[in-house]
Amino acid sequence: MDAYRRANRLKWDELVDHHVGAESYGVDALRRGERRLHPIEEGEIGDVAGLDVLHLQCHFGVDSLILAQRGARVTGLDFSPRAIETARALAEELGLPGTFVEGDLYAAPDLIDGPFDLVFTTWGTICWLPDLPVWAGTAAHFLKPGGRFYFADAHPMARVWDPGKEAAALPFGTLRTSDPYFGATEPFAYEDDGDYASDARTVSTRTYEWAHSVSDIVNAVSGAGLTFEFLHEHAEIAWQLLPILVPTAGSQYGWPEGFAPALPLSLSFMARKPG
Ligand SMILES: C[S@@+](CC[C@H](N)C(=O)[O-])C[C@H]1O[C@@H](n2cnc3c(N)ncnc32)[C@H](O)[C@@H]1O
Image (spheres, rainbow, N blue to C red):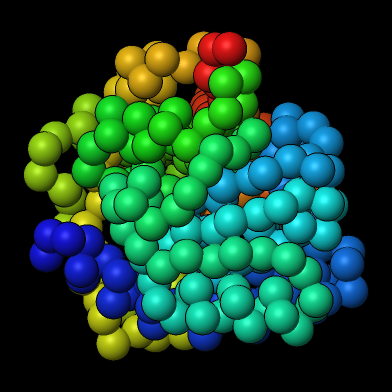
């Protein structure tokens, strides 16, 4: 693993304990069996009962365990030891079958036996990955013939807007760019002791993220031999990516009423392995 991903792992390891108590992760609702995915995925993944599901970058397993509650046999992978430890403890506490594997996404074929009916990965995943062709190839590797790869995440165009505090003070309807749209080999370095899901401050502050354009994503998935069933763009997203966004139904966020122009905030697709 390179120094970039080692730094990212330190930050993610630290965030886990803060997220277990964070409202947006809904662990108490999960315990009551009432936790749902966001409306975007709920409307797109269909019935998972009886499916073998691989959840890539599963964090501490909330979404994995929602799928397990619906009858899926879930394997979750994440490179944060604390996340995997917590996911295993939650699965045990809830009496749910779930296998949780600690490891880097790019090492997954050496760590996990497949195949799976569904590879599932959502919200805040590919920005941590340098190489999308290998990512999509990893998903394809794990799929049974006819199996499906589901993805939902920030729209690459939504990531160019300046999320800074001053941006929030701009006149209504104004957006300012901060990051370039097109990806580069080298990641962007960020310095931030905050947490998107709680008020916690972290000791690890340096993270590295990679930009990927829409064509990077589409070409990686097609290049891995998968066929798109749909690709959707949404004017809503699963977290408050920008201060101007407002809560909408089902814990999603969207543009405030009257905000023009309404721009894409997230993107989702389902792609199938032929056979
Ligand atoms: C925003 S979270 C994933 C979102 C998940 N849907 C959630 O909110 O519960 C990103 C996850 O990716 C994991 N991650 C980042 N880089 C990774 C890598 N190279 N290999 C495996 N996991 C990685 C982090 O540990 C973190 O748990």
